[in-house]
Amino acid sequence: MGNYTLNEAIVGSLISAIYDAAVDFNRWPDALRLIAETCGARAVVLTRQGDRSAQSWSIAPLCDPTYFESYANHYHQINPIWHRMTASQAGAVQTDAMVMSKRDFCRTEFYNDFLVPQHLGSILNAVVLKEDGRQTALAVHRKEEFGPEDIQLFRCLVPHVKRAVQLNIKIAQMQIQSEASIKAFGRSMLIVDRAARVIFADEQAERICGSSGSLRISNGRLLADTIANSGLLYSLIARAVPPGNDRPAGGHLHLNSEPGKKSLSLLIAPLRSEQAPFFTIERSVAAVFVTEPNRNVQPFNSQLQKQFGLTASEALFAVELMKGHGIQSAADHLGIKRSTGRTHLARIFEKTSTHRQAELVDLMHRSDHMQYVPFMLNSDTI
Image (cartoon, rainbow, N blue to C red; front, side):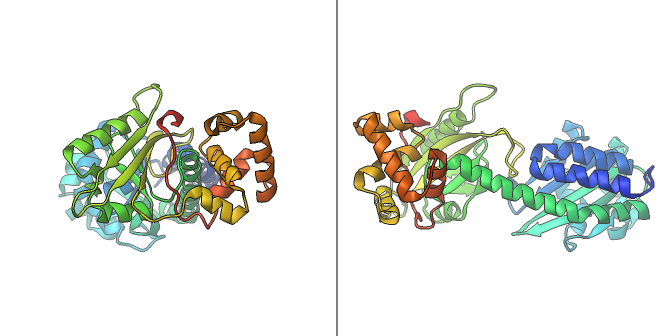
């Protein structure tokens, strides 16, 4: 039993901490510590597991990093409690004794070589959310057995943790789309860490990686068609996700078509967030934007003309604004006067019913008619 009496004040403080983490992913360690403290637990973890390692992450603020790493590399695969618990329906709250006899559990390698050295032995687990082949679970560990009051507490918390995780996902998706939109246009995007491990891939990017032959995902890592091209790709990713406080950069890579393979153009750009994306604990990641140059698509400026009634000159100016240029820079790139650029911008605002450049860029990026937009960034704009 935890050293507490379940009451409205305790539950209220925990729920408040959970919703703080819902709007700021970095607050989860605080919420988890409070849950562990309430239950008298020595360890607590919020984990999301998917079909691939790139879809998974864990937050365990009280766990020794050495044990945390050994669990990820070995003990997760042989943890008999985890695999039994996660087979349960979403919302299920269980202790280890509910899914496996204590006698059998105490004979396992996981119990003797992982839990016992940490002075642990009992697990209370809640399956918080199941969606799209992934599952999120909350678990606390301590040496003493968990009792009815602990189970009751978890049953109170699970619906709120579920809503918090769902909100984390929505916020992270919006954040990634917002950050990516100022660097490139289009719907084919992957998010990778410094080691080229794929943290996120949209549906179109997964299709390309599965069918192009020029780019693929193997064991959760992004690979190009040849060793040489993979080396170039990793070099660009390393530039986009530099160590320490070095300035991130980026670049382009063209994968030439060969028999049976599609020609692809890649733009690798840094994504450095103040708030860590929900898909990873890393703060610094890179976006890999993929285009198929041979694909028959309508030029982006023509799409703008058609949808918003812009003139050819206005559409070209709008494209420069979407690259992140200001009025003067956009005018210089097009070889026109600043006053002409200001006139273009005023007319674009009028035709799109927008009032600020950021609002304009967001409108064009979210447009349902912009199904595919070729990348037009130059390396000096990254």
